[in-house]
Length: 83
Image (cartoon, rainbow, N blue to C red):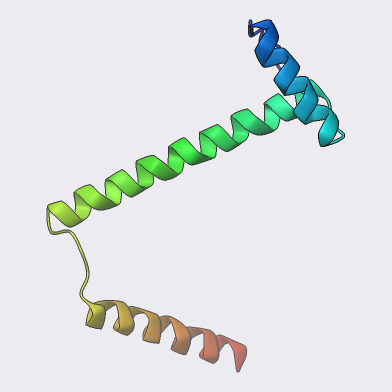
């Protein structure tokens, strides 16, 4: 694991340490979790924006196409399960 330094003001450190103590974890663990959550949220927002752009340009599937796709998948699973 790499080491990264982040400079935080005293008030932020106090708040961070209070939350870490309330969750019975270290400052480092809390920061690692917070960064991971931030990255996941940022990736989710990007995926939503991509979906919106797809819809805006008409790159969508009809309800019938979706149902047909999943019907095929269900049949494939049933066939494999029966083997």
